[in-house]
Length: 277
Image 1 (cartoon, rainbow, N blue to C red):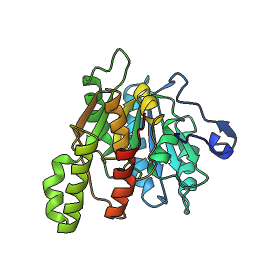
Image 2: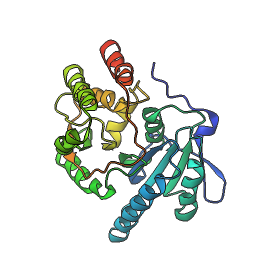
Image 3: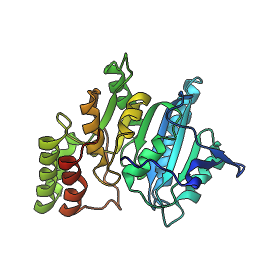
């Protein structure tokens, strides 16, 4: 069964005053136009750059369109550094209506952190974005336009994925032969066993309608690396339309390489022998 249980401490967020308040549920009606979920593990150094860029964009968008409402949910995935303290500075600066921090009692993995954040969202649209800021945040405009072009009615189901596939030739030239072999092997496994038609399943910049997020994240089993693959596989099983859009992406210092055994354990076994539905 899918594990969506929460520790008691994970049910609350801190307001700017230090008071506790209960997180809402994804099952509730939306009260914001956009929710941004930022999974973070030991990101006290890199996260401020990303949050500054995101908040600048969101605040400017709200000034240009006062009816636009948003929230940012930083999910601290059991960090050992001061990730929560750094994120709470943004709560004190912008208020808990705009920035909330969900601190997980123990590390779940990126997929688990994203899911816990998504299940706590108020947005009509939900964006997952990496804390290292590898993707230019303003590219949400392109991702959102592609989502709207999918015409998600009548069930309002749609997903729009940022993609780095257009950078593949350049990345191959910079990688070692071994890493290139693993990258191409992983892409082949994804295509052969699971997700068809999406060239880059791993880009951490994806936009969901609220209904699509509820349908997919409620069925997600994989909580660590490669959870994106299962997420898109579930979406295709439910025939949810998916768009793929090229985004600006920068290699950020501190990103680390996964060995083949991680690929095998996190991807091959769950998708060959488990049904996520």
